[in-house]
Amino acid sequence: MDPINKERKVVVIGGGTGLSTMLKGIKKYTSAITAIVTVADNGGGSGKLREEMGIMPPGDIRNCLVALANTEPIMEKVLQYRFKEGSLKGQNLGNLFLAALTEITGSFEKAVHVTSNVLAITGQVLPVTLEDVQLYATFENGKQIEGETEIVDYGSREKVMIKDICLIPNNPRPVKEAVLAIKEADMILLGPGSLYTSIIPNLLVDRMPTLLQEAKGRKIYVANIMSQPGETTGFTVENHIEKLERYIGKNVLDSVIVNNACIPEEYLKEYEMDGAHVLTYDADHEIWRRIKKIEAPLAKFYTQRRIVRHDSKKLAECIFNEIKD
Image (tube, rainbow, N blue to C red; front, side):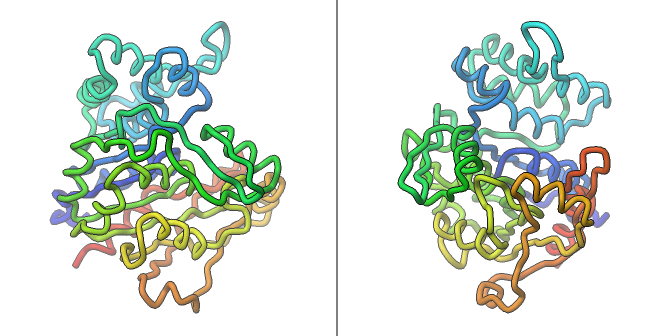
């Protein structure tokens, strides 16, 4: 590991499992990490707590806190534990912990701060906004759907693509610490994660596109390995970039990291059954004349569940090799 990287200020923007996977790797290279996380989730245990207690959805925040934790491994297991029986069936202990701390401290922001101290995390985890927001999508067939879970379910079920997406209320205020972190960052990472439900929701927060356009740090998009049914069916890597540029503008991204490892046929068949496919890219596309393409074998294969994810160690190495200059 190159010691000169240890104080490089890195901001990561996104949500879902892709973000927490990346954080596990990059915390080995720098201690100055700020994870800015979407709060539009309304499904699963997070959605129930959000509806019943009126708090921010804690799931993605929790995953990032655990990824950056420097405590005993048992704490990760405790905070990621999901109840299998009884009235709490399906609920996550870490989510309940954050919900309890929200009531004790009086705010979700303070609850995240306390949890960060308890877990001795590397860096900081911030919700992109503290306002109660919902995703609202307009599909190509004209149908309008509210709610992250409902949007994904509808797109996957009806096999229709998203035309536009917004937050309700519009232009919620960003968290001040997130604004400062972006301004001071040496590097800003977008993704990996669901395009419309993990990455773009952050870009719909007030001033976020302008902040990214004006930021001095290098801006890198980490492309997904596979498409997501209901969001990016039929998309290429270039399609993802084009959609992102609708929200942040052209000539903002400096580099895009893409996986070039081959996916075994048995995994492809599993994904095809769910309507997903490998994200391909065209080396001759005009996008690569203005954005640097970084190719690396980044896939990690989980044989029991037959799923493909980014390898956190390989991804982190790829990222920090890019900024050694």
